[in-house]
Amino acid sequence: MNNEQKLEQEIKDKGLTAPRITPAHIDDTIVSEQYHVFHGTTFTTCLLTLRNGYTVCGESACASPENFNAEIGRKIARENARNKIWALEGYLLRSVLSGEVSR
Image 1 (cartoon, rainbow, N blue to C red):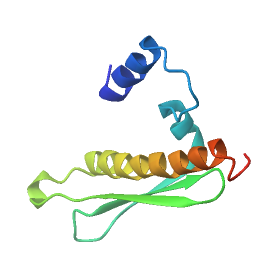
Image 2 (tube, rainbow, N blue to C red):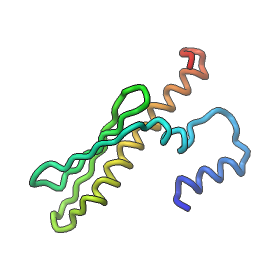
Image 3 (cartoon, rainbow, N blue to C red):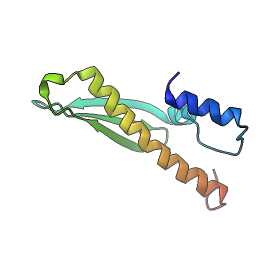
């Protein structure tokens, strides 16, 4: 069980049931992903496209080229892009809860 799953379980165990963003919600917003490693570098980008067409970008790079691994670079870049979705979805939910926007 990773940290995100542990935290999710703790929230459920404490009976915190008010509207909130969940890891599953974040994953459900993602409809596609693209990766690019810039030639001659260890710099990897991940572009996530969300249901509404908005995109978020994450990146990774390693200081020592000898440590570069494309698969690990993609994982880190994707996690960085995914983490940005939390703030966007949190803002949207708060706007809905305040009556500022309807969903």
